[in-house]
Image (cartoon, rainbow, N blue to C red; front, top):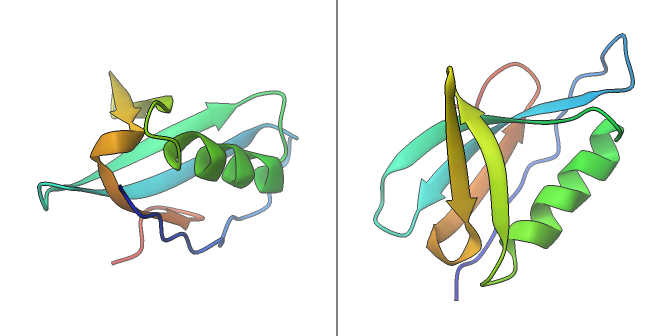
Length: 89
């Protein structure tokens, strides 16, 4: 069962659109930084949506890695960090 660790540090934006950067550590030990955008949600709602989605074994989160679509499956995620302007190092 994957476990989720999130630090909720999301910068305010000019619009109400939620765009957050996630550093994802996979069960394999690899890490990847992805961007998740929800034009209809505020930042706090976006973080809660990500937590709720990835905490389920059947959860799927569509995100971006650069110009590419990245689909994260909850069963493959070991940890997630949220940062305002890039992933926490």
